[in-house]
Picture 1 (cartoon, rainbow, N blue to C red):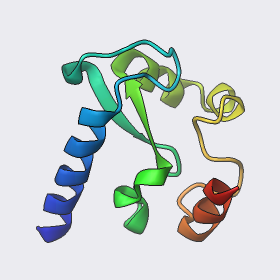
Picture 2 (picture 1 turned 60 degrees about the vertical axis):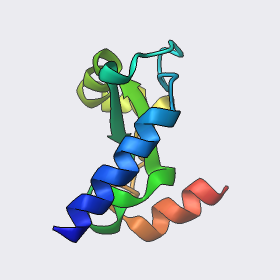
Picture 3 (picture 1 turned 135 degrees about the vertical axis):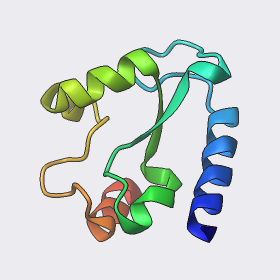
Length: 94
């Protein structure tokens, strides 16, 4: 339960402060914002904010429906980094 409370708090803060969709670059009202987990939500990745991207609902659906194109835009984890916290941290540091 504590992990879920931490996630909700981080998510609410993230969505309150990120107004531009990372794909379409439009300003999105709060009710239309979503958290996209670029590297997945497994383990530590769920609450790892540097791996998050704010996307509107339309773009979030597009990213999950077009992973190869989303990867080219930097919205999906590079090959070999999906659900790998250590590799994700190293990748985002560069």
